Image (tube, rainbow, N blue to C red; front, side, top):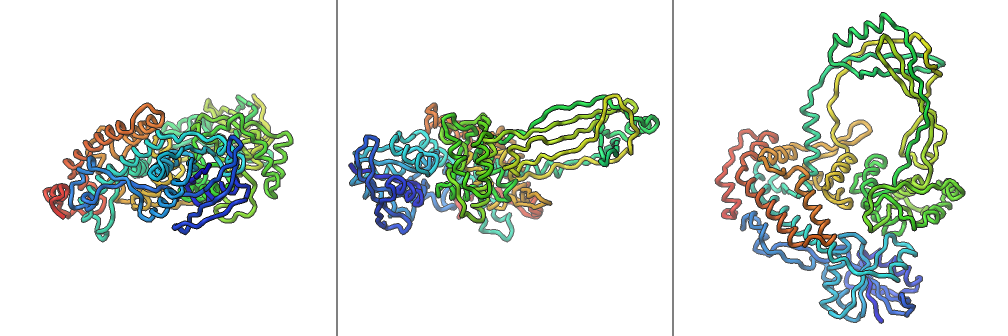
Length: 628
């Protein structure tokens, strides 16, 4: 029997071939300089020796687009793109790869798909099947499921292949068609209609995407909250005590007051009757919880917070580490390890490290704790974890790998433990309080420096004791506007509102930055995301049109993502989802055209083009494809 195996990337094909063959392989060149065919013998699940050829594609083989007559922007109305025919064909430059797998399929009995085990991987697998079946319609098709490129998962996947999930592949087809139709229609509408408003940038594409704009909407909403914030002055009473070499600050139970006179009356009472009485001393055990197992979203947030990398960069690095077999699959929503997973062997693999080897040994010598269970399980992949100890990494790969290892070891550790003391005092019927902390056991904090928990010393207080504070002052302050969003905060909002998937969130953020709808703005130790004038203008303009569900808000895309999930579950058909979404967006496109003046007003306002005379008749002629 001859078996053809096709992976998603050349490096993965080589690694899998080496594992399955035990290193006894021969290779053949193909017409693509990056693709090789690896030939070897291997025993199948029935212990029969079979001939195997392992090769690969380079991501998607095919792409969808409109026929040639719809390609020229000025020759057809953008509105017609909602219903124009669509062609799926092999992408330019991918013909040699198609020819190679077709040639190999023609002389094979069985095809096993080894693409990444996610929606996109299923879709790429379906493209491979399409090519192979055209060359050999009798070929048997199976799918290997694995979560890391290491010996045990790969051998297990080889011995127990499953069926390709055509429903997940269909969901990707639906999303691709919707993104093409909606994106192309609105992008042409914006670019053709408003390019003259963008002075000095006549060739700029003013793109639209159904994930891109809600992402921008979050950034603009936060910016407008800050811009429209009205600062208010407040007053508060501050009490301090210096005792046993330390200074203790007590916080007023009222927080602060916006009425200066009311605060002054209470403060004067405290001055007239300054003796403080300790009314409560509470000592309790407290914990700082170890982190949950690592998901893709949490990895991206950690990258921006702790590693000083963009979400796009950290995913690129994580993908490289996965392809080299150093970590498990980095696209997962799961934050709980399955009970059957041998975590102690993964910990043991880290015992040879000169950095955290001692800590790993301590875990396996009795300090191991079963990781916390989160509330997410995508039923596809375990949380992200290291698969082997690696010592020769440098740069970003070393930084990301170290974070993943430390996070994994922290998950398998005990919580940090301490004693917390809470003290309340009363001065002239006004209550104040302070809190102290003594850390007793650092536990996971020994290996996970990204969490901070430090001692806060309090001198001894006894309930009922009285003392004269060192100071009692009335202080003035002011409310401050909210900060702009950090990338980690934007990722959290997108994840919570269903904008994109865990695997695509970083791409949508990169897109609004690339399109100059937003920019990164360093401030102190943090980096915020601020909208450009163009970004604010577009969001405000669409919001002013008054849609029931705004194009810059998450509701439409969230509904679409929910429908795509139903396709994956077999509860909805691809064609039904496409039809429903197209009808909604087409109606909104028509309404946008009817109210284009509102968009123009926002653009001229924020781009300082108040003298611009917008010719609405010319605009509609252009939109109809009557002018070039």
